[in-house]
Amino acid sequence: MIVRRIALNGFRNYEFGTAEFSPGTNVITGQNAQGKTNLLEAVYMLSCGRSFRTRFDRELVGFDYSAADILADVYSHEREQTINIRLRPGTAKKILVNGVKKTAGELADTVNTVLFCPDDLNLIKDGAAVRRRLLDNAISQIRPRYAEFLSEFNRLYEHKTRILKDWRDKPSLLDTLDEFSDGMCRVSARMIRYRAAFSARLNAAAAPIHRDFSNSLEQLEIKYRTVSTVRDTFASEREIYYDICEHQERHRQAELESAQCLTGAHKDDLEIFINGSPARSFASQGQTRTAALSVKLAERDIFLAETGEYPILLLDDVLSELDMKRQEFVLNRIGGGQTLITCCEDEGISKRTGGKVLFVNGGRIS
Image (cartoon, rainbow, N blue to C red; front, side, top):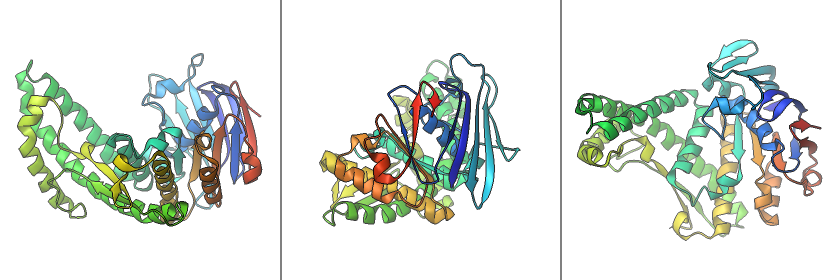
């Protein structure tokens, strides 16, 4: 998968900007706050129709502009394709692929991306929400139906949370509580099966990468964890649903007292172990960074195995956070597909990779 060229109009700080990318490595350089990450953000949106920095499309439209457009020529699935994303505040965004209207979830059939930013280096030590987001972003691209389940779950979760917070002032809200609880259990059962399958693949792909990274001194293991009553995450959807319902029944009163949803896929996590010990508690900073790199590179390998094409790899100012050894390991493993790397200074990255250099200054690309 390759983005050949992209044009931005009214997007973030780009009045009008165009860039042509190499099919290999592209180094996007410039000072801070000039628009480097904005450019990566636009490329990321080609794969899922949303930003990795904000939930609100209106924030993607520049302050002085009434609308924003992303237009890109891409090569994927052995053919040239054109993607157009139109953002108009107050109206739903419009997505066209080769002139045909698509949903955000359907973009993954055209382009896949793997994003790695400095926050991802804290993937191991941060809270469970970060690791769930990794699962959700990856699975949504290779299994578009999962994105529908995730959207439905979030809708149910928000409604149920409002009920739990407001029922004391308006007791009649409890009339619909069990309906939303049941809906969350049903959608959670579907999501758990997807998450368990992807986690198993992530474990299989990340372990050898981490072993190479550590010169065979460390063994990485990833385990998927969901609510305690689920006996087998690879069981049928029906069995998992009944297991989650059991958890819900046990925690219904606690939910009413705490005003929090205590049952559902929002409680899931990935447990990461290094040499048998929980990495979150016992790993050093260097070990956790190596593990995070291994996980993200494994994600890229899974996409390749799934689609037969490398996804577009987006490295947003991450190399500057790494020591030379880890930089070299990453750079030596990104061949074969298209990579976009942002950095404040070239730092010799283009020479080490043979990549094309694009300079960004004030929303202008040269």
